[in-house]
Length: 285
Image (cartoon, rainbow, N blue to C red; front, side, top):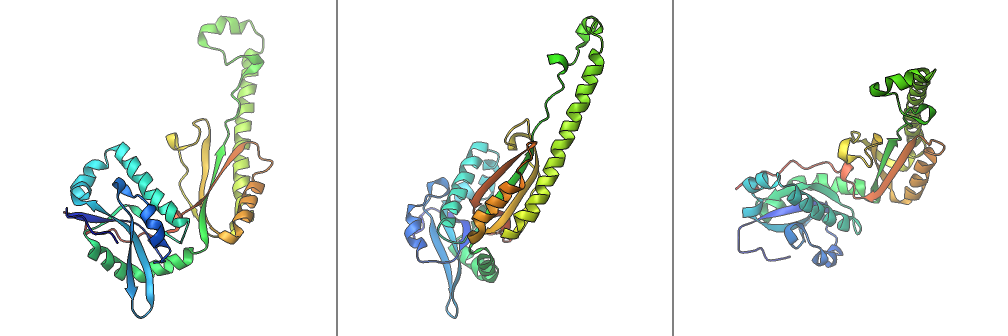
């Protein structure tokens, strides 16, 4: 365990883990937020042995107290860098053991306060870790592809400035309306395909998962392509022994549905299935 800095510090917690001795060899190679070392803070019950631990870093109080964070959360570059470091530690831990990810910027006044939280929530943490053991998270997103825009006779819809020219083309307006109807039918068909895919995924893939969470559909810059619409954004807690069967079932579910696009991601640490701890109040100055 690192000796705390002489400067006043807070304890930044990334995740709860089983206090596995093997992690002690992994942690020295990890770099946490603000380039800080990562250590394991464990609470041992003499009667039952260790139940849970926190992966933590000591961070300067002057840069991480409530007043400093209020300003820093307005700095998008800092926020992105900190989130990347936070998730990097969690993903590295998840590659070696079961993890319960904690919220970004989970802070305790000192190690005694962090240990008190472990003591207070140790049973819930141990139960959560046992539930997640042997499981990982997969993301399943469905996107509706845009239908082809109406383009009768190789041209776009008549513009007001070209009204005279359009009038000399018999049936141009009728052709455009027909193209509009075809476009709407294609669009409706793509949405119907998305519903079919969602139903198939629930029937074929869900049996390989222990749990399932439906997140709000993404929009704007969060989507993979501005031309596509995200209509399904689900997370599955999948048994490691059934991961390959789960992936195959998801891909099978969307076959023959050209109006949609599947995005299957993972394995991830189980962010969507980690019951959050009550926010610590000890980080205030």
